[in-house]
Image (tube, rainbow, N blue to C red):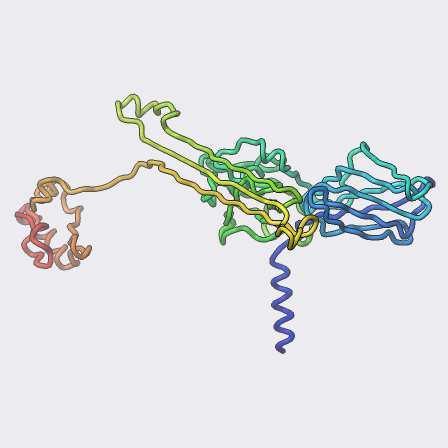
Length: 385
C-alpha cells in the first residue's frame, strides 16, 4: 500500500507540468535516398556547448527529444560518408522539427557545411502557434514590460483588456485575451511548462522581461498533454546561463511632468495630479566558475534576475465627512432627508436597533423632530439638540 501511494504521488507530481522542450527528428539518407543505418547525430547548443546525441535506426530514422529551446548545430557522421554539419537550427518551445539530411559519399574527415536550405516545414505535429523570439522581446516596446502581453501579437490572439493594466503586479490585465475565438481569460498559461495561473485563470506570476527567452502562443494545441482550458496555450520560457558572462541593467520611468494636463482637469482649473512609475532591475548570467577549483563551461550555468517597481499613481475616491454642525452635535440638517438616514456610533460602529429606529420614525411623524433622546447608547457628540 505504501509503495502504491508513493508511486501515485510521484505520477501526479510529474503530470503537473507539460513538456516545453523541443524535438528534432527525421531521416538520414544517401545519394539514392536509401536510409543510412547507425549514423551518429549530434545536436550542439550553440550558446552552452551542451550536446545531445542519438543514432539512426536500420531505416535511417532518428529522434532527439528534450532539447531546451535554443539554436543548435546539427552534425551527422557515418562510416563511408562525409561529415554533415548544419548551423542555425532554431528549436522553439514545444516544437517538433522534421529535419531530413542527405549524406555524400566520402571520407569522414571531410565535412559538408550546409549554410542555406529551404525553410523547414512543420510536418510532425498538428498544433499551430507562433513564437515571440528573444530578439523581438529585446526590441519590442511594451508598456509595463510584462512578457505575457507579447502573446497578444501572435496570430489567433485577440486582446480584450485595458492596456494600461499590464504591469508586473497585474494579474487580469496581461492574461486578458482570447485565443482561437474562445472566451477571454480562458487559456492555459505556463512558465517552462509549469502552470502559472490563479484559480480564475489569471496569470499568477510575471517574470522580468530580461529573464525571458521566448513566448510561445498556440491558438490550437493538438498535444494531449495540453488543453486544460477552452482556449489556447501560452508558454513563457525563461533564459538560462551560457558560456559567456552577460548582464543587463535597466530603468523605465513614467512621470507626469512629461505628460500633458488632461482636458477636463485643465478646463476646470484643477491642478494636474502627480504620478510616477519607476521599473528597474538587472540580470547577470554565465558559467559557474571557481578559479583553480571548478570550470563550469559547457557544464553548469547560472542566471540571476531582479526587478523592482516604485509607483505613485493617484486615483479618484469618494468619502463622506460630517459637516461642522454635525461635529458639534447638531444633526437637524438630516430632517430634510426624511426618515432615510441612520446615525452610527463612531466608537462601536453599531447602528440604533430596530426598536429604537421604529420609535425614532414614529416620533418624527408626530413631532417633526428625530428622537435622539431615546438613544442612550450613543455618545453625546451624536445626540441632537
